[in-house]
Length: 126
Image 1 (cartoon, rainbow, N blue to C red):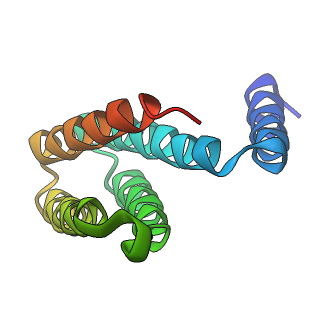
Image 2 (tube, helix red, strand yellow):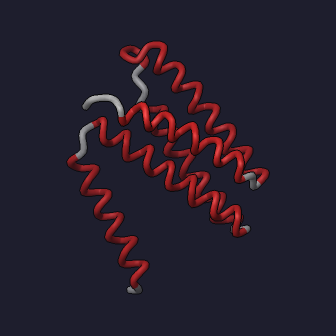
């Protein structure tokens, strides 16, 4: 096993271990962190012209955003949950467009939106 494969395996095990012990608040943070990582990687793939990798990474980011949408509690969250749902839907539509057009600016737009949501989430007391 080469060093990069070993590092990826360690990171995967480390992330899984964190998820097992994490609070629901921390799990959402981890999803957002993963989404931001995939978006940064997708941007890099676009810049390098790696179309297959770009599509895979954008697909993973869309799946993560879907997970965030699925975690919304409309009964407790009310208007905030509804607004987040609409924002997540917008993010997915922009990522689909970014994938079709290989447009790094659209990926950056979604990353900025997700970063803002994460900043707000990070400010919530656990």
